Image 1 (tube, rainbow, N blue to C red):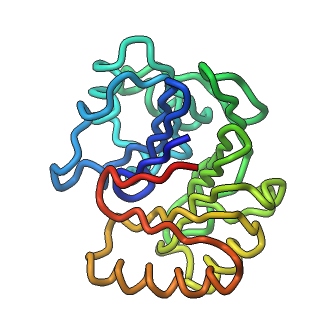
Image 2 (cartoon, one colour; image 1 turned 120 degrees about the vertical axis):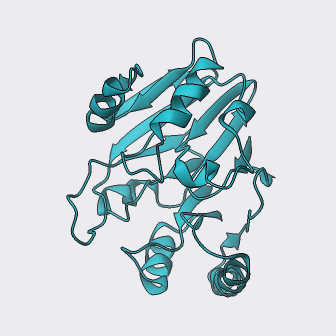
Length: 220
C-alpha cells in the first residue's frame, strides 16, 4: 500500500490498482501547487466532514468530472451539502464495504469542540485495517483502532494542543504516524514541529513519517 499526502488532510491511498482519495479540501488547492486534475483513475473519494479544509465543492466537482464512475463516500450531512452543488454521493457513516480491492470501514467519531461554530458530523475511516483517517476527531470511538499500522494524525488545529495530539496518538499506539491537518503552517514551523513530534514518538516506539511536500509518499 502506498500513502501519499497532498497538503493538509488530503491523502491518496493506492493498493493493487485501487486508488482512494481522502479529504481533498480547499487548502490542498489554495496555492496552485496541486490541481484537481492531478487525481486520475480514482476508485473513490472519501470525505470525513463538511469543513472547507476537508472538502471543497468546486474542486470535488472537477475531480468527479475527470474520474468517470468514481464513488464519493461520506456521511449524510456532507451528502446533503454536496447535493446542493450537484454532486452525487453515497452515505457511508458506519460499518464496512468493499471498494474495488480494499475494505473500507466507517466509524462515527465526534468532531472535536470548536469556537463559535456548530459541531459537524464527522466520520473516521479505516482502510484494510491498516490506515486510520480520523477526520477531526480524537473520540473514544476510535479506540477500537488501537495498534493499527498507520495513523493519519491531526498534529495542529484550533481545537487541539500538542499535548492532546500526543495523548491521542499514544492511546492508539500505531506503528507509524503520518501527520495531517497542518496545511496552514509555514515550512519553518512545520520543520520545527515535525522534529519535535519525531523525537517524542520515537521515545514511545512509534515511527513518525513527515510527509511534507505534495505527493510525498510512504509504502506500508
